[in-house]
Amino acid sequence: MKDNTQRMASIETKQDIEIELATRPAVRLFQGREKTAKRHGILGLPGFSKIIRGIEQAVRDDDPYADYHFHQIEQAIEDLTFDLDGELKDITAFIDENIPSAMRLPEIGSKNPVVVPVRFASRLGFQLVYQLLKVDQIVLKVLLANHIGLLPNKEKFETLARVEKRVRGVFHLVFAYRHTGVTRDDIAANNKKAQKAIEFMGDLEHGYLNGTNRSDNAPPLPPKRLKTIIGDLDRDKPLKSKTEKSEVADLEAEIDKVIDKADAKKTKTKKKAA
Image (tube, rainbow, N blue to C red):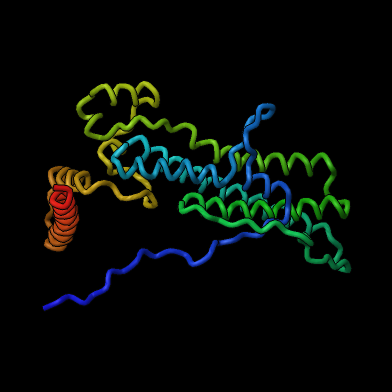
C-alpha cells in the first residue's frame, strides 16, 4: 500500500519576534558595539546568543566542558533574574512610599521607542531578553524618580551603572569556554585533545564528565552517550521497580530507533554517491 503521508516541514516563525526598548541603557545592552580601529567591541545580546549556539552545538557533540559552561551561564542568568527583580521592586517601593497620596504620576515611556527584531534561536538568549526588558523598566523608574526630585543624580548614575554592569557580566561568561573539539571519550582516554582542554579550562566534576549533571535546558546528548549513561545508572543503582525497568527499556528502544534511522540514512547516502 502506498504511503501518502506528506513529509512535515520544520516548524518556524512566520515573522520576526520583536521587542520594544524605551531607554538608551537597554538599547546599548542589546546592540553592543562593533569593534573599530579606535574602539574595542562590546558584546551585545545577538553576539552572546551566537556564541551560545556554538556552545550548544559542542554539547551535542559530547563536549563535557560545553555542558558545564552552558549550565554555569544558565545559573548566572537565574541569579541575574533574582537581582533585577530586587532592583525593580526596590525602586517601585521607593517611589510609592515617597509620593504623596494627592499626587498622580503619569505612565512613563518613550515617544519613539526602539523596536528591534529577535532573530536568534537560543533558550538562554531568550531568557536574557526577558531580563533586558526588565532593565528597561528599572531605568524608566529610576529616571522618573530623578526627574521628580526623589533620587539624586549620584544615586541615579550608580544604579544605572550597577544594573548595566550586572547584565554585561553575564554576557561575558561565554568567553570562559574554549572550543577544543574534545569529547567525553577523549577525556576517558586522556589523549592530546583531553590534555589540551584540561590545560585551558581545568578539571571537571565527575557529574559533568559522565553526563549526569547538566542543565535541563541544554541540548540533548548524542544517542551513544545516552546509552552509556543508562548503562552506568543500571550498574550503580539496580532497578527494583517494574515501572522503572519499563521506562528504561522504552528509552533504550527510542535510542535504538534514532541510531538505526541515522545508520539507514548514512547507508542510503553512500549508495547514491556510488
